[in-house]
Image 1 (cartoon, one colour):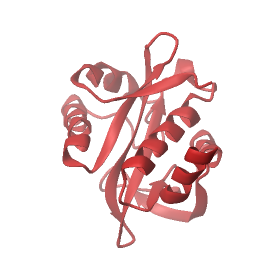
Image 2 (spheres, helix red, strand yellow):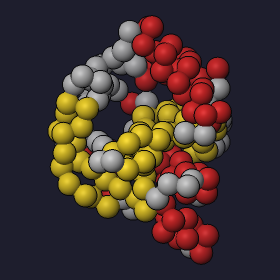
Image 3 (spheres, one colour):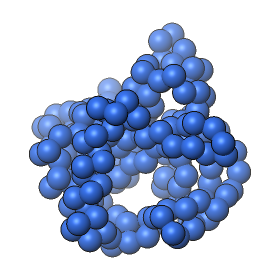
Image 4 (cartoon, helix red, strand yellow):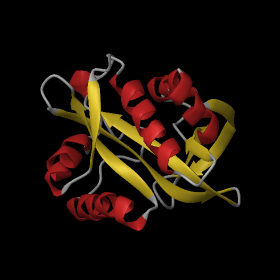
Length: 175
């Protein structure tokens, strides 16, 4: 049984976004953001579903409902194709329990059930073994190492992982 549930991002999740914005949590993502950047990100997360371009979720412990992280996906262009890009965060005190993998699988299932797109990609840093392990656990296929721009204007060496959403959807329905 899953330890977590995912719930669509709401105004109330701004505090969670601030808790995620630490040097340790942002080590592989260019460092913490300023308060104005956090507010812009929060607004973007709130707009994903309304725009039909993705969805952001808070990750909550099933037993208590307490927020422990975030997971989501958004449409982007990658190598001339429209794809979804996925990312996740789990607060340090909850890491190492399989929460990120469970949340990423739940968000991938959501994307597979609502998507017209074939591919869901994740681009963890090559230096982030935990996030690369999440990709493997969920069933992503490692495509290649690449230079990935994140945050805008800064490139990092990443692994390009992809998940075939129609195949993933079939595996969920018949598992």
